[in-house]
Image (cartoon, rainbow, N blue to C red; front, side, top):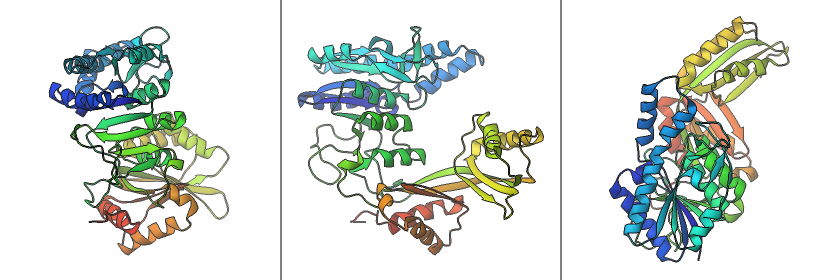
Length: 423
């Protein structure tokens, strides 16, 4: 007997019919003798609808009441899932976050999980009952309901899996795993059998939308093995891993040590709508970088790629960085205001929207020299100009013109041998 936490996203529970489809995956695991807990999101589109209602009611609303309204979406789904499972002959009971309890801090709208008491869930397992838990929410020290913010349901599922010491946490969504790149860009993309936590973190931060960063960080910290699976696969089909062997379908996200043969590059990611901003001839003095990026931080603007070039005599520096296109105007305004206020001095500010960030990711890059150089050569062979470069231990990213984005992804995917063998 194993213990499994399964999580269903919004598209997987978008209707009662889809909830029935999802419930069949739960039934398969229960019939196999496993103890199962279920975590659910709100029905697709429901959270946005609830947020809209709150904003329509008042732009200056109380965050505690915001949470009270928005958390209701998952409550509906959990109740319906428990009803469907019970109809299938599987004893089930729904639980809201405060009933588990999933204890959080009091940062309403963006709460962080502090602790989960597994006592009630352990009792349900012992009684042969499948608990269905509302994702995305918990309870503050004050006793008020809280919501966890973006990616909260994935985070809830991983936290529950860690609390009950589950063998794995299955994240069911509308894709059947993690691919080497976006299959919509290149049909030669292949599904990975396994990917390390670190690689998944990098890919999630670089534009891959399969898993939210918070959930992967928590899984890595608590050693929770994740699988990414499709709700729409036949629940009665034989369980076959991507490499064709018997096993769990989808992609397993796990410790690097579990992956016997590490590829140099595991995936190629693409993030569009990147703006490049350059401050030229900035008077170089201690604290100038803190002043520049502090001005952006004050406006909650997330900065990505950063490159600095110091002049020959060391008196000035050019600083270039990227922000999302949606933050471009706010960033430029904040920088100009900070300059006028004397927080730092510069000669000119230039900017451009519409860039594309292409990245290669792989834990194998740690032990192989020349990966970045080979990436640059592959792009040069396609006459693609590189505007910015950033690197880390297991990734290299470049900023290029958007018109070359998909060509760059396909070229790199082929160059590093990630195309399907039969393609």
